[in-house]
Length: 207
Length: 207
Image (cartoon, rainbow over all chains, first blue to last red; front, top):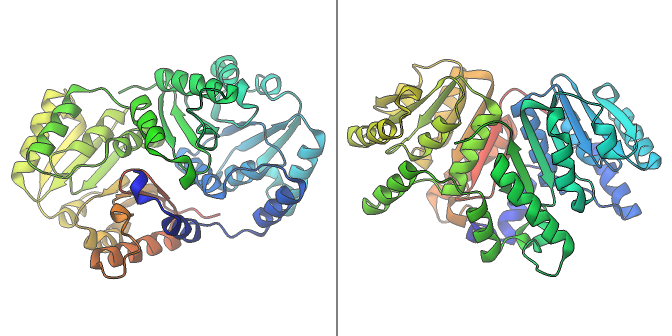
């Protein structure tokens, strides 16, 4: 697995499968200017592809920031909507701005508040996306299980923690290891080694 | 992307997300004994997860060998079936043996012949899996497009060609580069850098 990845091949992949979109570019510039972390663009493309495979009615994001990942989801929707949740009103306002400019406002719902609390208002979530504080991932999936649809897809970003997932001294790494183990036992899961590591789990199925 | 992958983390991933299944183990031993190449086990797990996300009625495999990848597909099916095609009767016989032993015979259809020719007999293919001779990938997708369902998923193995995809002197690498470019332009595609590189493409959708 590792020996197929080198700088040249990564460049090849990023170039070949990029998404050209002015709004995404504007968001990337905004993120850099504000020093606001956003999902790796290749991971974003994967969110987009997974949305098209799944064809969901309802996507709920925990920790949307200014809407970069939600934009990939929204663009992949053939129906339904994505709910963006962030505790900062300013972030959600920016997300609304970008979605309006991208002409996809009708595909989104914008919420300000504690992501876990707000998310419990929704039922039959087809895709749940975790990108809130890493120490809260396990709490999030535990408290929201009953809000998921029967065959829901759960996606979590940063699960390889910049390559530090095995660090013994990093508290967040430890929390993420516990989360990854939980997900591997409870769902059919796999981690895609792109960006910071993207966990994909399917509910209610087993080999 | 690359700096999150090292030997330790790969071991962590393979261990955490492995599938324990006696038949799979038996198939792996058989493959080694016969020096018959099979898909990377982590890639197999990904086929399994994608099947559960997609919930297809019909999966058609081009180049099934003795059924190792088909086994991951079949185990992910909630309905429908996977069609295995291989030009060697002996391989298909072995596949039937393993599927019978795994109690999933009713989820599969076994065909001997030229994969491209046999596959044209099927319509509304929900997942098309390419694992035949690499120089035929492009011909395969071109001739089978009309047999795909509207929102079909196309998956192709070995698209990073053991890390030699950028080699200028390798004819197969060149053919695969042409195929990858075609897929990136015609479908919404992404290559997952696991195993030998797994291409995932969705039909009839665009950002």
